[in-house]
Length: 349
Image (tube, rainbow, N blue to C red; front, side, top):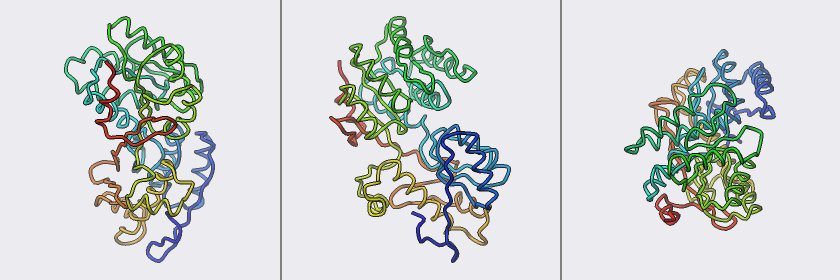
């Protein structure tokens, strides 16, 4: 997306350092890049690493654009998020399920017991809070969300099960949901998960092994071919919905057609997101009025919406560029794009 692009007759140079998804190494890398005089940091990966580097970027007035995190950071410093938040992904799939005939008391959640997982639970809460008569259940979810610490005991309180980060143990979270079913008299029919690949597959496999007919949802950090492959090993080929935050790689949108030509076999949802963010950076740079300063870059970003080959991005009212969420469903060994109404076919009486 950056190759051969110029801004005011100057070439764009792209420099990358591997931070190994380690916050301390991310801070080291950011300081090194700032020392080399970078203009902006673009499409860096991960929520914990982003949390660690933002203060350093803020101190040096370096903008952060299109980081691969749905934690919806608003600062410190100048943060321009491209992707929809994890909360928005979960809220969208729960909204679609409720519109398709699921009752709000039949929706439960399973999440990683950290900021990532709780981001998804916030979306779960937002969807339930829009439904009448859900005040007492929303209060339980608030109790879960408001617990302090890195890994508090969130199981056994409400319609949520959690697992500890960097583990794949599904049993405690599963038992939390079963305890909720028994205590409330409600039945989980959709379990909205906010996990990463292996723990997500382990939980889905365990629940199926226990005979549950639950339908599951999974957000973009644990979606696509890799999740499908892991689920297939557990004998799961249906009743799983996954959200994505960019159009399908086989879409006919101009930016996707262009990305297919540029990336070939390397095109997937993740690389497409990076390609769109790269194009967005160039578009904003080329819209700068006056000298190429970071201040003018931010003014250009916030001055007008951008259409990146059919993908709409708008920073004019807040720092969240896109709220686009795509629903896909597991059909055999692949996730296939579906319309929200297709969830009606998954409602089992």
